Image 1 (cartoon, one colour):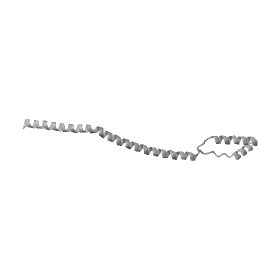
Image 2 (cartoon, rainbow, N blue to C red):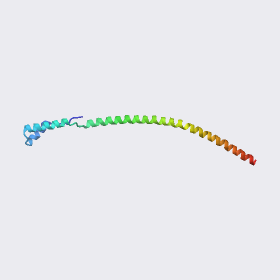
Image 3 (cartoon, rainbow, N blue to C red):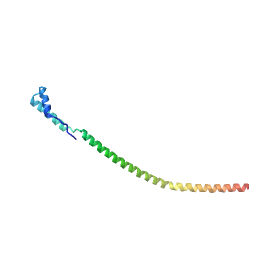
Image 4 (cartoon, rainbow, N blue to C red):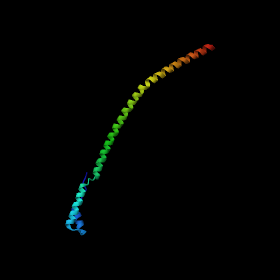
Length: 114
């Protein structure tokens, strides 16, 4: 984090011009400088660096998430096909059985009338 610029000489001169004695002005200036030094202030540059880092991290996380979603989708498709295979086989068998049954009934009806 960056430090806030504090001009102690200018501060002391301002206090002196307002009628504060030199030792008091220097003591106040020292106290204010110490207070500024103990505060951890973020500068615009710090914020910009943080933003760039967050954007990079976000893009990286987005890419990882997209990859994970594609892998999950492929796994789900594979699992679904595996689960549906017996159902498809049963449906195909049922179609053939109905077709044979329909052909038999049709042949019996035709035989009865012709």
